[in-house]
Each structure stands twice: as C-alpha cells, then as structure tokens.
Length: 254
Ligand code: PGA
Image 1: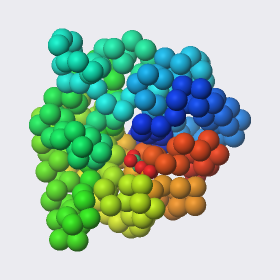
Image 2: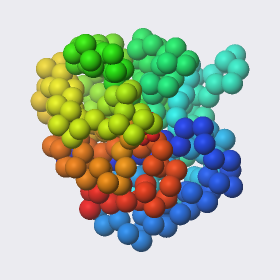
Image 3: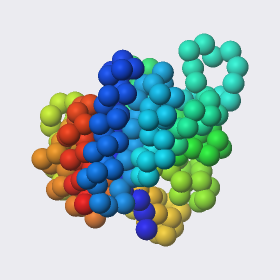
Image 4: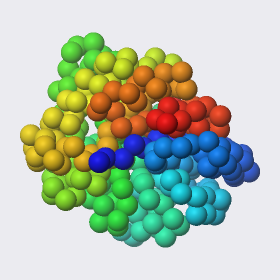
C-alpha cells in the first residue's frame, strides 16, 4: 500500500523563531488531532533544519524535508548543499524540480535526473515536482509536457529506485494563485502519470508510488482533491505557513 503524504513547503519564509513556533504548533496539533497514518513532512529553509529536527524529536508520522540539494557529493560549489549533509541533520525527503527553481534557477530535467539519483544514493526520498504552465495547458499539451519531464528525470532509474520516488504534480498556474486544479483535472493527470510509470516499468511498480497534488490546496478543497483514487496527498505552500490550516489539510485524510 502506498503512503499518504502531506508535505508543507515553507519556501523562503519564516526566520528561526517564527519557524520554530510554526513547527511546534503543527507537531502538537498533529499529535493531538490526527488519527490516520498520513505522513506529515515539514520542509523549512535549510538554515532551520537542525532546529526543527530537534523539535520533531521522536514524534511519529512527522518527517523533515529539504527544498533542494546539489547533484554532487562535495566540492567547490559555493552556496550549495549535498544530500549527505542533509541526511546528517535528520532530513528524509528532498523536493527536487519545484517549478520556482525550474523558472528562476533554470533547473532542467537532465540536471534533475542527476539530483534524483544523488538523493536516492544517499538514502533520502526525492519529491520530484512536475507540472505545466498555463499556456501549455491551454494548448492541450499538458500530458505531453509532464510525460517528457518524468521520462527525462526519472526513467533512467531502475525498478527498485523509482519505487522510492514520490512525485508531486503541481500545475504552475495553480501555485500561489488561489486557482486549484479541479479534483477531476488532478485525478486525470495523476492517473496519466501512474499509467506512464506502469508502461515503462510494470503496474505493481506504479501502484507503489505516491503521487501528491500541489497548487493552492487549502482546508476547504483538500478533502475533495485527496479523495481521488490516484491522489496520495499534497505538497502545500501558502497554507503550510498557518498551523491550523496545514493540520486541517492533514486531517482531510482522517
Ligand atoms: P501553494 O504552493 O500551495 O502556495 O500554491 C504549492 C507549492 O508551490 O508547492
């Protein structure tokens, strides 16, 4: 059975005291209120990882994630962070290929293929982001584009490797805009992605992979989106900065 995961991507928000306050509130609420087995992932900026890791302590079902990592193990890459560094401070998940990094930092799927492998080689779980911009959707090319993204970044992996990857479908037009993909649009793309994996590998492999939806998920639309058969959770931006909203989104699976 694949996991249900709700991950909060804080992006470049919160100083350390603010981040610790937010994380403490979420940890307490999740422990008090969440009944199901959904895995909760807190993804703060790099500099807060150790502080938040200490707060999570042994809280079950709460994991730590990072927003990016470099594809090389070490060396002269000023400003970058490697997967082994992240692992050494308690990170389990790493977001790779978020559309903001594709757009502003020109990350390509061939670089992302290297990053995915590097993260897996270090025993961490990549949350690989894919998704189309508005003009691509309007031209009807969204499936073609997402197919190309996952093919280039993921299909070089072995069957055992790809089973460990989490995929996040995030239509760029729905990120931070308040426009959510409808539950049907999300289901359609998630089923399409699972089908691509099934064709490339085999159905049992595709069945094991958690596919998250991201893009303006809020407490009032989470339940409908998460109830779709191929939606296994969410990657939450804006609403992850409010402990009440984020916990309510996690509870949409209860
Ligand atoms: P949003 O961001 O929830 O604010 O739309 C989602 C994301 O970028 O992961």
